[in-house]
Length: 253
Ligand SMILES: NC(=O)c1ccc[n+]([C@@H]2O[C@H](COP(=O)([O-])OP(=O)(O)OC[C@H]3O[C@@H](n4cnc5c(N)ncnc54)[C@H](O)[C@@H]3O)[C@@H](O)[C@H]2O)c1
Image (cartoon, rainbow, N blue to C red; front, side, top):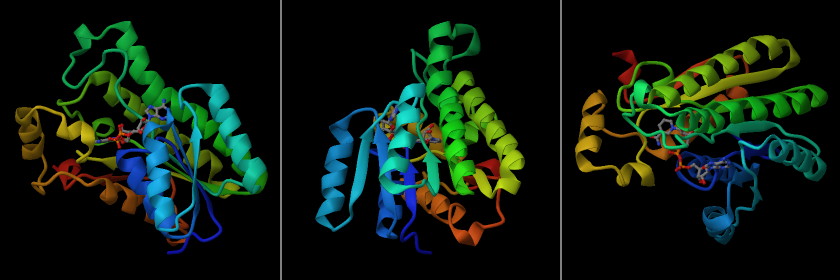
């Protein structure tokens, strides 16, 4: 699968799943534009990839700010003429929301914080990416969701789960609506990925999480990047509106 000459956007690309995705597409010849909220992680990643001859573009852009998303897409189009693939990967808990927080304890700040970074940002991204893809005659979009959005996964929070479920439905709705416009829209639902934030979780919680995965192993960021790699390629040309779980069998239980 080659991505030579493809313009690929990865949001939240400086760490974890986004970072592995940036690297995977850059190695396949894509021109990768990646965003992050600040330069701290993105600049070292860019330098590391440049050392092995991979050129990427880092744009500091907050996925929860509509004006940032508008100028991100406009900037890509003014520099490269088009946007072929967009991977909307930003998502988290915010505003005091945290794994295991019960609904009756969730503050409005926590609810709004998580919705902003795990749902509203996907609305902004989809909207402006689709406007561009309609204008250029097609494109491919993929969103990072979660097994928390497809099942009740009690180790996370109800708001995060609802935000991911809402993103899945927006993905499906848009996939159906824009299928005849040559725009494919899908999602990947990671299980529990071995990222720096998992490493910082108490051992007891990590063991409880691991016990839930039939494969008995955490997912790697590269596992998720591999799913995006196929999903956004021409080999998946007739695939739209799906959610691929990459979760070691969890969602089959
Ligand atoms: N790690 C997991 O186990 C797991 C499981 C299921 C789903 N996910 C989802 O995968 C995606 C990536 O998660 P990760 O674990 O790789 O995260 P991460 O924290 O390692 O990386 C996320 C990146 O996004 C950036 N970011 C955060 N807020 C931003 C904003 N508003 N605008 C732009 N950039 C922003 C961060 O600075 C960071 O570099 C998220 O959508 C998350 O919900 C993760």
